[in-house]
Image (cartoon, rainbow, N blue to C red; front, top):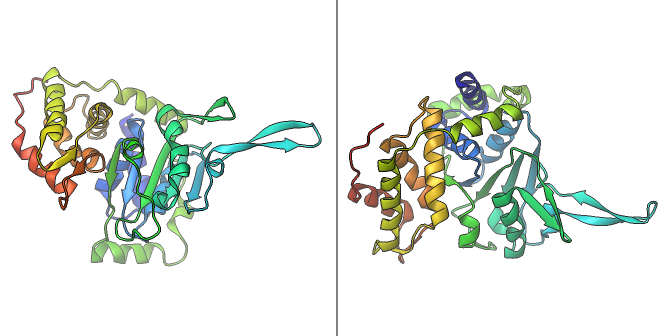
Length: 306
């Protein structure tokens, strides 16, 4: 499966220039069976990343532009009356896809945001008492602008906890931006992207990720980090047990991406800021990512036997 991973990363790098770390993080979320939250300013390639991923895995892609007037049924779908058959028929919403981009998710009302809770956790949607499975694999990439908050509805803790990790693409370097200009000189690069792996292969990769070894010592280290967030004086609300499990799954996926069948402490340390920062609530005036990095320096780890 190593060839599939390399092909997927290379394919994404064709359209997303110079963002290898961000690509790795998105793949960590995908391969661990989770979802990714991109917090960044407009125009840095968030939508392009989602579209490129969908094309690369030969999956269906749907985009939801979140606005205050967006309804829950605009996400999940609804039953409509068919006069010819004199029966109600279900019209699937955009959530019935493989890669779903929820653009500017914090502009949707809490009622609409909550429509994603069930499908993100259980990979199913219930409408009028009937439950339907969504296509597999199912992956949500949500975006929000960390600068502009006017007219937005902050995501509740339950919604934030559904995302495996959060990340930012950031601005490209001067050289990377020049390469972007050259690539987009005649037509968008995404038009040239071809699928490099199949949906079935993605599911196979997810299964292999779940088999990556995590020692008891590393599990204790993960637990120590999580419990430290619940006792740290600069944090008002610590990490939930779901966050504990997600950090372990993400570490397995990162180890797999780095061509290992076992997790090492550096995997956990690298991922902790991305897995923790959007979950915890810092004390007033504190920065979540800075707190996590300070906490990583203060929590020791015993010798790990692989």
